[in-house]
Image (cartoon, rainbow, N blue to C red):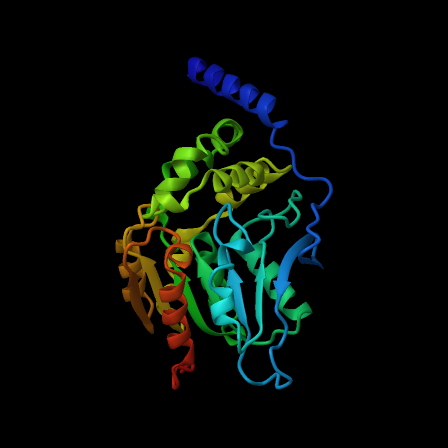
Length: 310
């Protein structure tokens, strides 16, 4: 035991030397090309296309929710295809992208509260949500806790079950060990880790990897990412899926090795009103590898009549 404690202490010291002991961001990063809103204690970066016509009742808005370690740029290939006839809002969740990374609660309930307040400030009312990866857990929680604010759901390659938890996340949840692991390894070896998320490795350019390094090394990123991991309560969330009243499209990359297809199939069976679409020759990011097919399948689902809550 003494040897283990010494090892953990050494790892923590090395992590602190590399990261400043998981310091949070003290001042928000700004992006002149996007908008910001003060939501509770966080400053959230978002993009709002606005209503495409003068008729604001044409259809409910689309809300895009990205995954772990990602940002609203996840959707930049499919929003032009999906947002021609309706208002679309995408955001950087608290702690991610260029939203603020302050010391606060990053559990599912807190994430839902931030998204809901953003919706209120933008007067979105009811929305259709399109979510990816970790963002699916946020979207499913929001729909479960506030069912009248969501009309339909699209969940893509999502984290929905406790047994999906990567070993790195599971080992990082205890105190000290998590700080050491995130401090030492969270932003390392991206040149081989990022390609694991894609079926077509040619899409992973040197520039993409460099931008990922820059994003993960922004002030506060490690601390907030660790806080999000420790706030995951997927086992409890799983108990609520069977009561979800919404119609859901589960859309999954067939070659996804991050969240394998079997979890998408399981989720489609678990949700009472779900259908599943599999995108061939795509990994964890089908909206990037096959944006045309992805957008077509999503648009078809959202346009279907008679899919209201019962």
